[in-house]
View 1 (cartoon, helix red, strand yellow):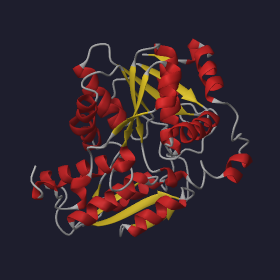
View 2 (view 1 turned 90 degrees about the vertical axis):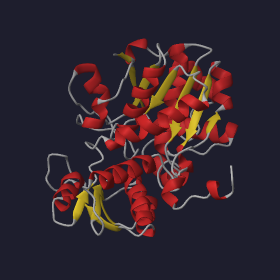
View 3 (view 1 turned 180 degrees about the vertical axis):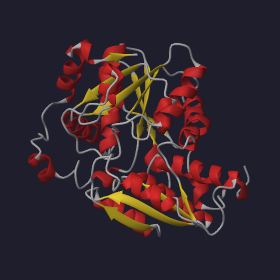
Length: 349
């Protein structure tokens, strides 16, 4: 490859083609290959950069997003950062509507990327002042384009067209399962759809935080919330178009204590720092290994940079206030717990 061929013409072209790394400590104890797709390597620091790029480029190609228009979206953080980055690199203005109470790190990054940030009070989705409805109203005004990450299938396409094929190529087709949390559903939908089309017997495991209604919906057909979680941007209480495209085989729910425990263990044994969503993914991957047995190749995602979870996941005072222990279990104990867990907790679809 020539030198000029390796030079990106703008920062958006750096999105994707992230590395895949083996988590040795978890792989050794489980007898599986547990692999982490390093989405924090994207220029905006998260997997949401992929959806942001696809949403905007598809809108430009369709003529819905025209020069001079302002992009608007409601988001808990990472999608807003990704959209702000892509918007700036392609010459568009960006307005982000975010609920108050999200990690300050995300608010600051959105502002640093040059977007206008509108903060609204958190409220139930049915309330028209919810950040989603607020963004939708603004987006309906002349001169604005609403990205609509939950219902716009460009989100799903980003992973069906790019992330899934990357994983398939990196594993050389040797992959048995994918483990993922769900926010908009685009990541799990695009990847599960592509990878299941390539290999018979491939399994997709959904891991849900407490307080989300997805696990309940897949089990009983209705969204019911039990408990709560400090994770951000994952777990939903309604069915959206991107999630409808997902090919899910199994679903589990894990408590915040597990993601805190796994974040410390992986940092100690492997030198890998994880954010809250990523920690839940990795805990879910270890749980999946316990259920599937030895010899499997399991892929999950490092969704974003660990420092975006500093004020919560990596804040000892915050965790103690929530009654979470910092060093509750060693790896052997956690693995034994997952092996002995009630199989009835797994939803088989």
